Length: 118
View 1 (spheres, one colour):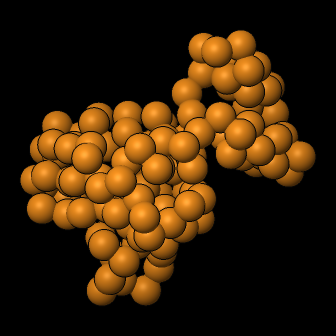
View 2 (tube, one colour):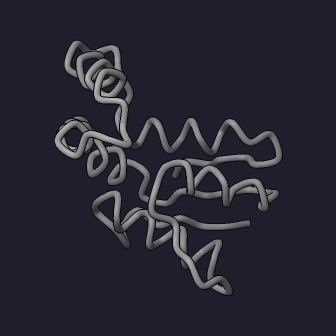
């Protein structure tokens, strides 16, 4: 069992630091991307309890996600600006996912992991 505590972070970078300490404490690299977070979960089996998930839902919600996409568009390559713009448009139109929802989806896509939001 692993516990992610939403009270210990308030942004995506803080989330990456939290999961790096949780899943990568014996490694010399840290999670720094959504893909990287997905990758480390392949080595985990069992339950993940996300405490204070309501706080994380707020912290990693609409405004932070919008800024996340704006930053990727500003950076440009290697990001597909057209794809990121579509994701931003979807978010603004109420059809897109927030970062919190993306992270939950990543965890739930791993069949050997049971996510409990508390």
